[in-house]
Picture 1 (cartoon, rainbow, N blue to C red):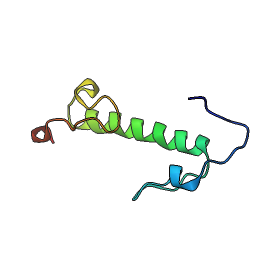
Picture 2 (cartoon, helix red, strand yellow):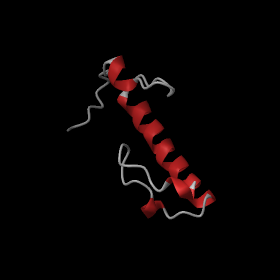
Picture 3 (cartoon, rainbow, N blue to C red):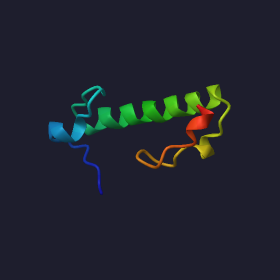
Picture 4 (cartoon, rainbow, N blue to C red):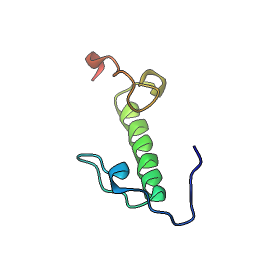
Length: 68
């Protein structure tokens, strides 16, 4: 899928998730996703877990809950 950076605005329903901030364009959505990945890395480091032990992508099966 190609990303468009020509100022096109995506439909709001593609950018809204309950409990998440509303992103009005693809660039802010990607920034938010970058922040999510950074927070994920910080969480893993704070809990002494290797990032490779976490799910590979958003939506994968959760990791071992006993490690939380």
